[in-house]
Length: 214
Image 1 (cartoon, one colour):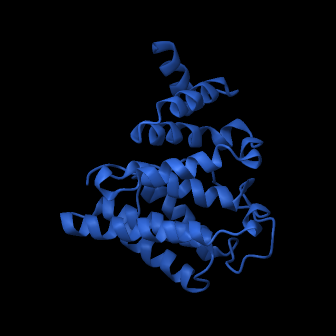
Image 2 (cartoon, rainbow, N blue to C red):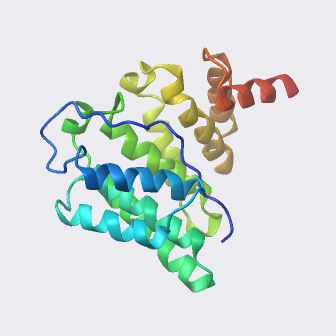
Protein backbone atom coordinates (compact mmCIF):
# COMPACT_ATOMS: atom_id res chain seq x y z
CA UNK A 1 0.00 0.00 0.00
CA UNK A 2 1.74 3.14 -1.19
CA UNK A 3 -1.13 5.50 -0.60
CA UNK A 4 -0.07 8.38 1.61
CA UNK A 5 -2.33 9.14 4.54
CA UNK A 6 -2.81 12.84 5.15
CA UNK A 7 -4.23 14.60 8.18
CA UNK A 8 -5.54 18.16 8.36
CA UNK A 9 -3.24 20.56 10.21
CA UNK A 10 -5.89 21.93 12.52
CA UNK A 11 -4.02 21.68 15.78
CA UNK A 12 -0.68 23.39 16.34
CA UNK A 13 -1.15 24.40 19.99
CA UNK A 14 -3.00 22.53 22.70
CA UNK A 15 -6.09 23.58 24.57
CA UNK A 16 -8.10 21.51 27.05
CA UNK A 17 -11.23 22.97 28.54
CA UNK A 18 -12.21 20.18 30.91
CA UNK A 19 -10.44 18.24 33.64
CA UNK A 20 -12.71 15.22 33.26
CA UNK A 21 -10.29 13.37 30.97
CA UNK A 22 -7.91 11.01 32.72
CA UNK A 23 -5.38 11.50 29.95
CA UNK A 24 -3.25 14.62 30.36
CA UNK A 25 -3.27 16.40 27.01
CA UNK A 26 -1.10 19.16 28.40
CA UNK A 27 1.70 16.86 29.49
CA UNK A 28 5.09 17.16 27.82
CA UNK A 29 4.86 13.57 26.56
CA UNK A 30 1.48 14.15 24.91
CA UNK A 31 2.55 17.40 23.29
CA UNK A 32 5.76 15.85 21.97
CA UNK A 33 3.91 12.81 20.64
CA UNK A 34 1.40 15.05 18.90
CA UNK A 35 4.11 17.19 17.36
CA UNK A 36 5.89 14.05 16.16
CA UNK A 37 2.61 12.74 14.74
CA UNK A 38 2.19 15.85 12.61
CA UNK A 39 5.72 15.48 11.26
CA UNK A 40 5.37 11.77 10.47
CA UNK A 41 1.90 12.10 8.92
CA UNK A 42 3.13 14.79 6.53
CA UNK A 43 6.39 12.97 5.70
CA UNK A 44 8.43 15.77 7.23
CA UNK A 45 10.49 13.58 9.52
CA UNK A 46 10.28 11.24 12.46
CA UNK A 47 9.73 7.52 12.79
CA UNK A 48 6.30 5.92 12.62
CA UNK A 49 7.62 2.96 14.63
CA UNK A 50 8.71 5.24 17.48
CA UNK A 51 5.45 7.16 17.15
CA UNK A 52 3.42 4.01 17.78
CA UNK A 53 5.57 3.21 20.80
CA UNK A 54 5.13 6.71 22.23
CA UNK A 55 1.34 6.70 21.79
CA UNK A 56 1.10 3.19 23.20
CA UNK A 57 2.82 4.42 26.36
CA UNK A 58 0.33 7.28 26.65
CA UNK A 59 -2.65 4.99 26.00
CA UNK A 60 -1.44 2.58 28.67
CA UNK A 61 -2.13 5.30 31.25
CA UNK A 62 -5.82 5.25 30.33
CA UNK A 63 -6.99 2.66 27.84
CA UNK A 64 -10.51 4.11 27.69
CA UNK A 65 -9.60 7.61 26.56
CA UNK A 66 -10.89 7.84 22.95
CA UNK A 67 -8.67 10.71 21.85
CA UNK A 68 -5.36 9.10 22.79
CA UNK A 69 -6.65 5.80 21.39
CA UNK A 70 -7.53 7.31 18.01
CA UNK A 71 -4.06 8.90 17.92
CA UNK A 72 -2.53 5.48 18.52
CA UNK A 73 -4.64 4.01 15.74
CA UNK A 74 -3.65 6.79 13.36
CA UNK A 75 0.01 6.16 14.18
CA UNK A 76 -0.41 2.44 13.56
CA UNK A 77 -1.81 3.11 10.08
CA UNK A 78 1.17 5.37 9.42
CA UNK A 79 3.44 2.50 10.35
CA UNK A 80 1.55 0.43 7.83
CA UNK A 81 2.09 3.16 5.24
CA UNK A 82 5.82 3.15 5.89
CA UNK A 83 6.34 -0.62 6.09
CA UNK A 84 8.22 -2.33 3.26
CA UNK A 85 6.73 -5.81 3.27
CA UNK A 86 3.15 -6.24 2.02
CA UNK A 87 2.14 -8.40 4.98
CA UNK A 88 3.54 -5.81 7.39
CA UNK A 89 1.62 -3.06 5.63
CA UNK A 90 -1.58 -5.09 5.96
CA UNK A 91 -1.00 -6.02 9.60
CA UNK A 92 -0.13 -2.54 10.88
CA UNK A 93 -2.85 -0.82 8.86
CA UNK A 94 -5.59 -3.23 9.92
CA UNK A 95 -4.50 -2.95 13.54
CA UNK A 96 -4.67 0.84 13.29
CA UNK A 97 -8.11 0.79 11.70
CA UNK A 98 -9.44 -1.52 14.40
CA UNK A 99 -7.94 0.70 17.10
CA UNK A 100 -9.60 3.78 15.63
CA UNK A 101 -12.95 2.02 15.40
CA UNK A 102 -12.59 1.08 19.07
CA UNK A 103 -11.88 4.73 19.91
CA UNK A 104 -15.13 5.81 18.23
CA UNK A 105 -17.06 3.25 20.26
CA UNK A 106 -15.66 4.73 23.48
CA UNK A 107 -17.18 8.16 22.85
CA UNK A 108 -19.79 9.35 25.31
CA UNK A 109 -21.90 12.52 25.61
CA UNK A 110 -19.18 13.91 27.89
CA UNK A 111 -16.85 14.23 24.93
CA UNK A 112 -19.14 16.88 23.41
CA UNK A 113 -18.36 19.17 26.32
CA UNK A 114 -14.57 18.90 26.07
CA UNK A 115 -12.71 21.01 23.57
CA UNK A 116 -9.31 20.49 21.98
CA UNK A 117 -8.14 23.32 19.74
CA UNK A 118 -11.60 24.83 19.84
CA UNK A 119 -13.33 21.68 18.57
CA UNK A 120 -15.19 19.16 20.76
CA UNK A 121 -13.18 16.00 21.25
CA UNK A 122 -16.02 13.90 19.86
CA UNK A 123 -15.47 15.47 16.43
CA UNK A 124 -11.71 15.10 16.57
CA UNK A 125 -12.12 11.38 17.14
CA UNK A 126 -14.82 10.82 14.53
CA UNK A 127 -13.18 12.88 11.80
CA UNK A 128 -9.72 11.41 12.42
CA UNK A 129 -11.18 7.94 11.99
CA UNK A 130 -13.32 8.90 8.99
CA UNK A 131 -10.46 10.64 7.17
CA UNK A 132 -8.23 7.60 7.65
CA UNK A 133 -10.91 5.10 6.64
CA UNK A 134 -11.47 6.80 3.28
CA UNK A 135 -7.76 6.99 2.48
CA UNK A 136 -6.86 3.33 2.83
CA UNK A 137 -7.39 0.97 -0.13
CA UNK A 138 -10.89 -0.33 -0.73
CA UNK A 139 -10.05 -3.91 0.22
CA UNK A 140 -9.85 -2.88 3.88
CA UNK A 141 -13.63 -2.44 3.73
CA UNK A 142 -13.83 0.88 5.59
CA UNK A 143 -15.43 3.19 3.04
CA UNK A 144 -18.97 2.76 4.33
CA UNK A 145 -17.77 3.33 7.89
CA UNK A 146 -16.13 6.54 6.74
CA UNK A 147 -19.27 7.73 4.98
CA UNK A 148 -21.51 7.06 7.98
CA UNK A 149 -19.13 8.89 10.31
CA UNK A 150 -19.07 11.91 7.99
CA UNK A 151 -22.83 11.75 7.63
CA UNK A 152 -23.11 11.87 11.41
CA UNK A 153 -20.63 14.73 11.85
CA UNK A 154 -21.83 16.84 8.92
CA UNK A 155 -25.42 16.75 10.14
CA UNK A 156 -24.52 17.71 13.71
CA UNK A 157 -25.51 21.26 14.62
CA UNK A 158 -22.67 21.53 17.11
CA UNK A 159 -20.14 20.75 14.38
CA UNK A 160 -21.83 22.95 11.81
CA UNK A 161 -21.55 25.92 14.19
CA UNK A 162 -17.75 25.73 14.03
CA UNK A 163 -15.87 28.26 11.86
CA UNK A 164 -15.14 27.32 8.26
CA UNK A 165 -11.42 26.52 8.74
CA UNK A 166 -12.32 23.96 11.39
CA UNK A 167 -14.79 22.04 9.25
CA UNK A 168 -13.82 22.45 5.58
CA UNK A 169 -11.59 19.35 5.65
CA UNK A 170 -14.53 17.24 6.85
CA UNK A 171 -16.63 18.25 3.87
CA UNK A 172 -13.71 17.57 1.52
CA UNK A 173 -13.12 14.02 2.75
CA UNK A 174 -16.83 13.47 3.27
CA UNK A 175 -17.36 14.13 -0.42
CA UNK A 176 -14.70 11.52 -1.22
CA UNK A 177 -16.41 9.03 1.07
CA UNK A 178 -19.84 9.70 -0.42
CA UNK A 179 -18.59 9.18 -3.96
CA UNK A 180 -16.74 6.02 -2.91
CA UNK A 181 -20.02 4.46 -1.78
CA UNK A 182 -21.98 5.90 -4.72
CA UNK A 183 -23.93 8.45 -2.71
CA UNK A 184 -23.69 11.06 -5.44
CA UNK A 185 -26.59 13.23 -4.28
CA UNK A 186 -25.06 13.57 -0.84
CA UNK A 187 -21.65 14.25 -2.35
CA UNK A 188 -23.05 17.03 -4.52
CA UNK A 189 -24.84 18.60 -1.55
CA UNK A 190 -21.65 18.63 0.51
CA UNK A 191 -19.70 20.00 -2.45
CA UNK A 192 -22.14 22.89 -2.76
CA UNK A 193 -21.92 23.59 0.97
CA UNK A 194 -18.12 23.45 0.97
CA UNK A 195 -17.84 25.79 -2.00
CA UNK A 196 -20.10 28.30 -0.26
CA UNK A 197 -18.07 28.42 2.96
CA UNK A 198 -16.24 31.70 3.63
CA UNK A 199 -12.50 31.65 3.16
CA UNK A 200 -10.12 30.23 0.60
CA UNK A 201 -8.27 27.28 2.12
CA UNK A 202 -7.31 24.44 -0.18
CA UNK A 203 -10.44 22.42 0.58
CA UNK A 204 -12.79 25.30 -0.20
CA UNK A 205 -10.81 26.24 -3.31
CA UNK A 206 -10.95 22.66 -4.61
CA UNK A 207 -14.73 22.64 -4.17
CA UNK A 208 -15.14 25.90 -6.05
CA UNK A 209 -12.94 24.59 -8.86
CA UNK A 210 -14.97 21.39 -9.02
CA UNK A 211 -18.22 23.32 -9.17
CA UNK A 212 -16.97 25.59 -11.93
CA UNK A 213 -15.87 22.58 -13.94
CA UNK A 214 -19.33 21.01 -13.85
